Image (cartoon, rainbow, N blue to C red; front, side, top):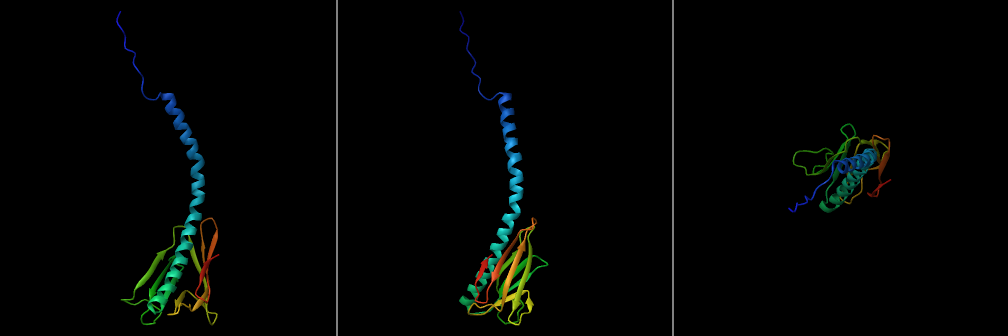
Length: 162
């Protein structure tokens, strides 16, 4: 009698593959809406951190370099720029060092409520060589979901998230 070799089946059956695909599809349908809802909050957090770190870096560089540092907020362009103001003009001239040039993440709106010592609304703050700002107030960011986050700048030069 001839011995017949029994063939060993390796791999997955079509039914097993279909079950795995169905499980992955169900998990994806649960996870994707959560991820989409999570994204605007993370973008808002990233924008708030950018503004806070930009203000802190500007203040520390003003002290370290013994120079004036200006932070200009541009609400229309949803961005801000910080630079060393060598000639004390308040505007960035050729040759002046840019410290920060940051755009807000997609879907994040920037507004400022900064006032100077005369209670006049301003869109820029200047840190003197001791780290004291010329203005104080709030920089507000809002995402597509309507969530608002604030960075508070105090006359002492400190800035905090609110």
